[in-house]
Length: 478
Image (cartoon, rainbow, N blue to C red; front, side, top):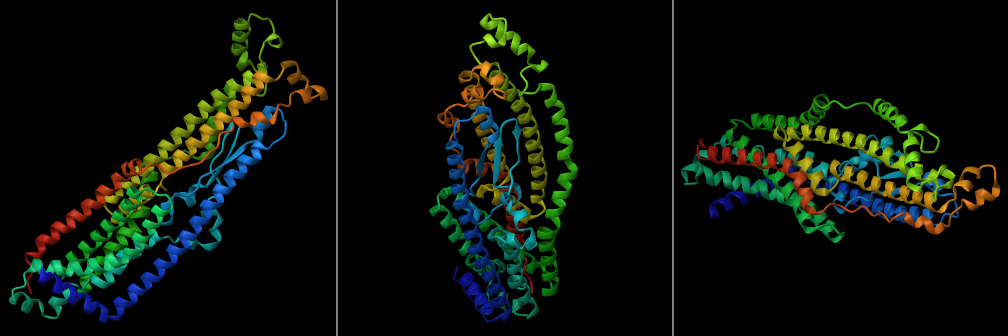
């Protein structure tokens, strides 16, 4: 062990005297610290702002004066998605998918106000995050520092004397690896601090530790690859060329190739085409604003038979409100079917892209990082489902008020009779059908299950490089 530590300390002393290594570490540290500070400030501000807007939206809805309940159905409500604590490391798809949604009757709106649209004038520079710095720049820094870690001994003809002194190839390999891992460990300190800050901000310890562990595994993969290539290389130029090609392929070639392949393998229908197809089905359901629509003839007949009356005006409930309830239920069932089909398609595309993690450690760590941070596509889908449940509940609550508290005769005459219009306004206490909404991150367990498909390739990369390195270290020759 002392031999390994001696080799490692000697390598680190050499790097400290090398200006290139010091400069690379300094640049990386500056970029990382700046991205950490800016991302933490941006996410903290966003979380505070969205929580405040959520409370304000609920207060605004509940403070509305007496109205016809269907006017409140169209008045609508806003729901906001605050970023999870670990978004300070990896904001994930949050910047692309939008952060809030407008909820109203008869419609399922999409999330809006995405940060990507808001920062388009910055040319994408606004998206520099700690996760991207670690995924792209950390391996590049390690390559610059460590590509010659073994091959330099061969070029300087010091490898032979070292082996002649009784140092084994595996001891040399372990010492050089330990030195490079030491550099990686220093670079991972900010990640550890950000993960700890996430715990203080309310994140679970398991998720924060898991996110840190994923990036530790990613650094181990690159350290193992660098020392392996440096061991097998005959010259530092060759080793640097191979490692640079590996970095380019992993970070810049495979990710866009994965996205393009997933888009071709799982083609998606355009939104306009999907909306037209859905609208054609919606027209068959009838117009919920028109109680005389033939689509509700069966509902009318059933109610007349149930209450044994001849006309809807004699029903003990408001037929218009009943039609609104029935229409909203069937309409929501249809819209949910289309929404689930769209989300399933998006997940299939995401899964196809994640397969490329077997070709690129960067793809694997990126996908796993988003899942554990709670900023992945699955979290966005859960937000859409929870807000849709909120929308359906308060709309149907207002429709029940419409059916049970408004006289049918007043309801059909309110547009031309001011007294009837006044009597169709119900108390503002009825707006309490709106439930308070707070979107919370998933527990660590579900996040880990979503990340497992991407963690496995990362561990496989680490296992392959470690085994090959162990095997090659036993055959180190001058």
